[in-house]
Image (cartoon, rainbow, N blue to C red; front, side, top):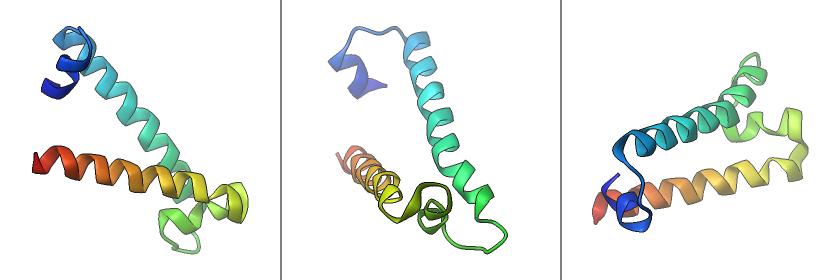
Length: 77
């Protein structure tokens, strides 16, 4: 929230709402394929292949990597 408040002029309530919405979207993006693939027990990236196909699974995987790098950068700084 501190970094985000320097980029835009959102109040604390708005920032928390944005965090909540982002978390729900992230949970849906990774939760749904995990449920689909839970019968075969693959990881989330491999589970994306069932509903999205091999090439379609690249986008969620790349987005997850970018998200993890972003969080790591925020935690380190």
